[in-house]
Image 1 (tube, rainbow, N blue to C red):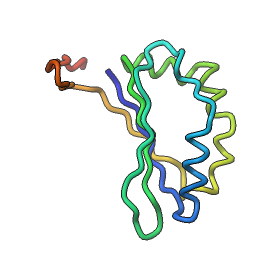
Image 2 (cartoon, rainbow, N blue to C red; image 1 turned 90 degrees about the vertical axis):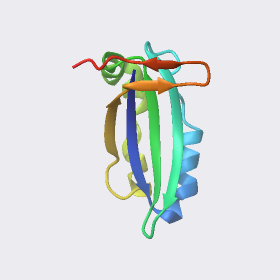
Image 3 (tube, rainbow, N blue to C red; image 1 turned 30 degrees about the vertical axis):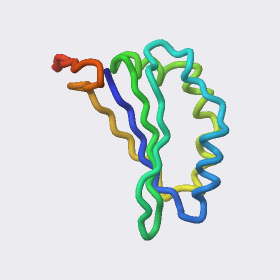
Length: 114
């Protein structure tokens, strides 16, 4: 499993516009092979920004990489530059390989693939 996250520093005055942009967008992930789940997260309020993160769970790193080369990805990001005024700088991308997942039903250990 692989988690892709983008962190956004949103200008406090643009918080509602940022949320509106994300919550009312066309979602292109639902039919992409390997897509598991998406979360839009709102974090702490700082002096100059409010932290948000997009958190996408993929079956594998390969599935995520295939998404980034897909027509759905290009469509989803076609108007990304229109949101620049809402944030301070570019989003910070972070990618994570899941080493362990614990659920109420089971504990699954995932072998590290290095």
